[in-house]
Length: 316
Image (cartoon, rainbow, N blue to C red; front, side, top):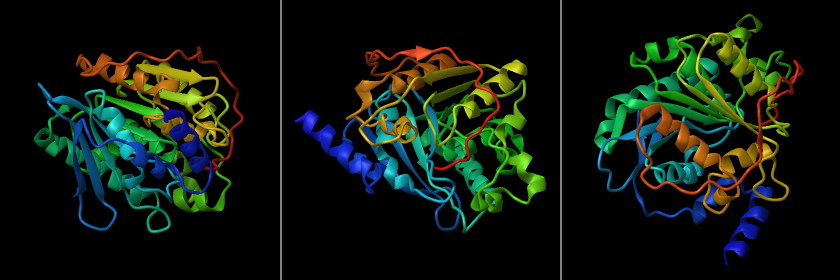
């Protein structure tokens, strides 16, 4: 039955239905969910919380931002991410934000900052520890989380002065100049402001501990984005951990880029140790043992290596 489910999901994910289908096989047990909480006024500024049941102490918190080229997607598609993190004793927050063309970079970054500030101020009511607050994202969502972690102006403007416990980036866009696509030029323009959109330009010695996960065969967001940011952070003396996989597979016909987040879903979770890497990173930074540790599945990983300066135009 499990093999049938995996094969069925593989066929669906490879088609037009998208990641939201993974929610159909995501259990509702093991966590308390609070949905569609407004973190600011206005449409699209909502978040969902997935808190592990039976916490015996306040738990670490991860705020997750989904990908979609800054113009697509919804928090409602990522229940499986909330369940995955909560299964490891983490209070997960999946945040929505306004998207292009309704807003450009200033708009969605303002939303992201306000979401994190709201979580910091309110998450203790849901069992979370605001002093152990991480930001995490996939693809364009990882770009947003990286800017929150590295460019203090965003969280400062939202009224949050407390430091983040860490940043976790999955297949993120951190160093993607030159910008050639017309929609991206509009999102991040004018051209004089392009450097402000690049997380790599904000690497600093006070950056929070960083975990960068990427697949070497990712042709949507090239791995040199992660490699460049890691090198920049190390050059400043900031703590950074990289996990670079040869490939990340979840089903035939699905790119490693999409699979980098899809493997957090239960049907694919045992095929790779990606969730274990995230949970271990959070535990290392907070000293909070996992509530339900799992046995990592074997997966070949290689040390980071310089890949040159060529970049791939973002094609999320």
